[in-house]
Image (cartoon, rainbow, N blue to C red; front, side, top):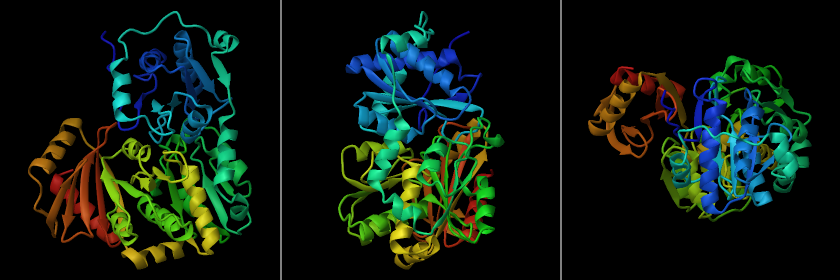
Length: 469
């Protein structure tokens, strides 16, 4: 049987455990990683794993392959978040980071992410180079993990503590703790649970235990996956902020004091407001992926800041952050980054920044959003993930690009943009429908922006009807 061709998607290689995600295939990917690293003259790699099934096994497997090539693996004593690996690479001066995670994918998946020595996702060119070096044959005659420890080719570092020290330097944690703001935190059974218990011991902690099955739900911090968090906040008048992270704690979802979900579009705008108006950061660029609200461009223009729109995938933002000064960068799916930290999305860091904004301003999250609307106008965004056969998925994507719709329901298409998928502006610039394929699943992502949730639903339904999905 011919070996599986291993392809890295939008954010690493992901596959179903025991189907394509096997010990043998992890060995092959690790071999490609080792060969590439040796070409670069690299000798040290930080390896971390989250709370998914067999993370430790796959992490140790990776270390054994690297160790065969004389490469030292720097490992944590237990699970850690993706940002802890990225920061760990920077703080230890390592040459690369490897994270065994499938991020927000369903529990049946695991994955393998590459992190650059700059502390963010490896650039697409480097990922492609590793991919090209993945052999068909499974590496054999590997040293044991115990043997590598004895030889000093496996070193243990407390990457969580390194991260916590960095957080204490970046934030006024005492101000947040003593502000009287009641915080609920939902780890979604993910890798943020231990750090957040230490940072915010008095918060209400939900799903902060290890459960590799994630209670049967994909650990993606979006409104429909966080009903227990919403109910918890609604039923407790003392709770004013809800923070949720995904499986490897690099993404975020927020709730206001009424238990209403606050999406990434709004968080990005709030981060820009906080840094510009309260922290006095007046220089730098705003970087957003194609699916993010255009209101972020509007606010950047109001502040006299340059902005750039990239393809979907945080790696494109990280590439720019590594070279230029960026105040805020982010994607619609909850991956957000800010100046003063590594060029990496970090769900814990962003959650703390919003909590600090509330503490410093003395305003509720709802009041901060109202301040935002006063500047750019109110808006709402949502997305449908539609399961379709791959052939049909690509057919729709091709149609949207080559023969774009002129009308979507009652709306006239006034402009079409193609960057990564296709965005149809409807009756002006304030409402739009966008369609793009998932990079990792047989899913078509359909996005919309409108004035309020009812209009967004109307646009999504009209778009799906037009595409017959």
